[in-house]
Length: 198
Length: 166
Image (cartoon, rainbow over all chains, first blue to last red; front, side, top):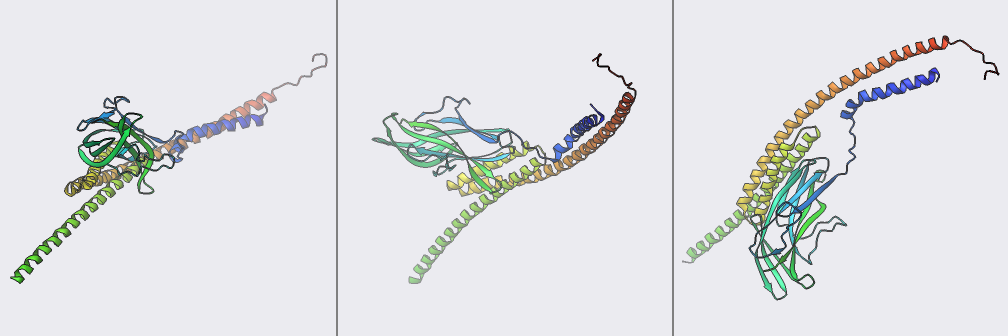
């Protein structure tokens, strides 16, 4: 190696050391993008905080409980709205393809502020207060969710394939958009099927 | 007698109009209380986001905001159920917490900003010193190395290799 080549090595080495020394300051000034994916988790767990033991066969005045949870991995603290809705088999679910929520009215709602990397969980206790059967259809009149009574007026026809009157209690996740200053459907929903037996 | 009846009907009609008017005012008051609570909670959330961006630990504020959110949800459900008094009470509770959190978020944001600026100055000063030392050290090393290099090159004795040796 001649002297010029040594000079290049010296200059390169010095520049690397200078960059290392300046890195803490650069880290405070230049925002480096995080490589991790940004998303929200949304779940329903059974009464034992496990993905099992979900209420399925329900009777009038029986009390059932599940746990609703949200996990925030969006990089910032988030403001979520969880809408609890009730439907029969023919009523529409949210449309995941076009990110549209279900047009059904929201019954109960939760509002949750979750720090980045944190989770929020709340109990959801429900019971059917009033239901009536008429030949091949079941009519659910009132639902009791977390101590609040809701008039649902929903009916289900007898499902001959799965042998039951099926309803679904489902939850939609909405996220507050600070730019739009309103909640936007976050394209996530979970639900549990209920077979109304009496 | 006719005037008495007319007077009675008039009083009844007046009562009906006044009560309807009060009922409407009641609903307006609920809607206004709900909007106020919603705005207060959202404003507090935006303050918390600013504090978080400034580097503050906002987990305590989020706990309070969750309480406010709970009251806001209860207020909205009470309103839907026609319980206007309950709705106003819950909305007021939510609004109160929202205003408290907004104030605390401002304080936290300002503190975090001051700390961040101090940290930035300290780190920048340390970096500048380190860079200066590295530049100076590199220059001295280079001078030392160059001198040794020349000394080594100048100290070399020319040797002639004959074709037989190679």
